[in-house]
Length: 141
Image (tube, rainbow, N blue to C red; front, side):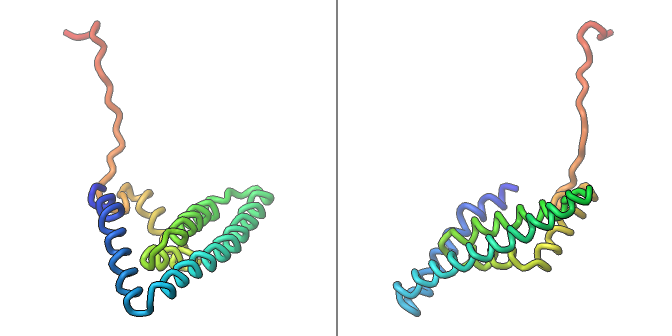
């Protein structure tokens, strides 16, 4: 888990900066900034559209008395996608746009559910659910 947070908060911003500098030196600074703003605007529209579709599907399921668990998971992934798309950079935009593709969300959701059911975290660590019971001091031999 520590490696994940290291990559998230240290390596990802460095990679984003490097890529922005490289693209900026290739196509120019103004075009790079424009491209970042366009991906944020397009991403915002797609997030809004897919979020509403997911919300309406969840409402439809609830009206029929069924739990909208899958739609809730999709909603969370769409929200994460929205955050990633508004962060300036091409790597986060790519991940954000991938999360907007329904087959990608389905596959990721299946993996997360399978990992939870099997007792393994997505990182591969085994999860052991346990309870510690401390003996009462009055009953010690």
